[in-house]
Image 1: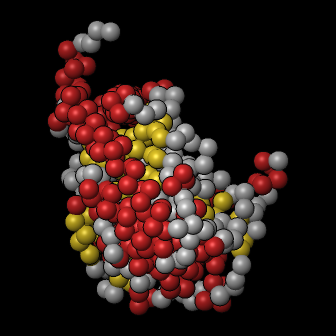
Image 2 (image 1 turned 90 degrees about the vertical axis):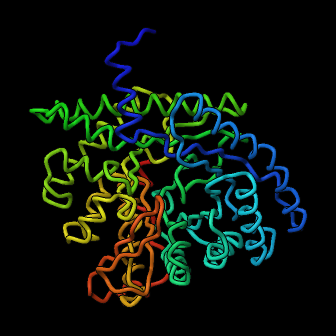
Image 3 (image 1 turned 135 degrees about the vertical axis):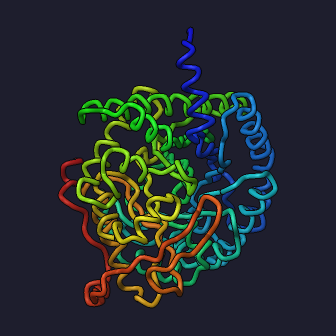
Length: 445
């Protein structure tokens, strides 16, 4: 295949000036063969992962250097720890968490994900043990992440799991609560943390990648100055195609280098706190002066559709969430608009109806109480099961007042503490049990 000079210049510009990179390369590993009813044997078996983790870390660096493409983070996803704790004591979860942290640190892995459980219909011994130890494990680690799947279109919404999750995050340090989330309809092949885990139905190992590239799309819109919505959609779709092709190229290269099957490309646009790397910046480049203004939902819907169409042309291996992330703290413009008051919780909830982000990386004041946070999470998860889509919540409870900012540094950015509605929901959230599955369950057969 021959490339024109313009195409080569365009790629160089995307990589050097528009922050195009690979958000993450994730090695997903089936760790179920390591289960034992003796925790010491389990911990010893985990050492067998060292060679493949070391090889993965080396291979990612090698591929990054070979193609001159920055791969921002190396991640590992393991089978949900819930399965281990079905036959072990609850306190053994802490030992497993510390072991996973040790493996990540030893092999240069940025995040290791899988301190996770599924509790959308109810609890098992294992899922309850994961939830009950979540705060202690996250407070004592730095690279470990986890999630609770508390709702699904098939099963409904487990409000008791939501309440236990909120109890745990209220006991976490801000940095620790940034590594856990609660979701509906979590996918089995996500390369994004905290939701990443080695899901059921997957091969023993595979490589998943997540692309980035908000700056590429924002600049393409600004350069092309589209005169119609069709042109705007087409500009985004073409850019998404190029970004996704890069993701598949790098993912397959890592896969070949390490000798592990290639899994999927998550098409999601993911921002970073850097200027010019913002999903909100795309919305504003589309003609909304400040995200949160009327029309934002329509603009995001166009963006989502064009990304998915462009991405699906570029790769047959679509996975993960494949949407747009609008984490408030990790997107410099989103954080700014939240401080200015253009983005509030109901704006985020509305935007979640057309993307898969949910409410992500937002601070909440502990002084406003747990009940409002429980209600907020139930809102998001209910939207997820009603629309039959993946949605999650990652909030950071802090002692500060609404309107303040907590700087977590790096990719996590500056967390804005947003005001929850000052309305009592205690009578509703005090109801126990689960919300039954919706009529969509019948449609599925």
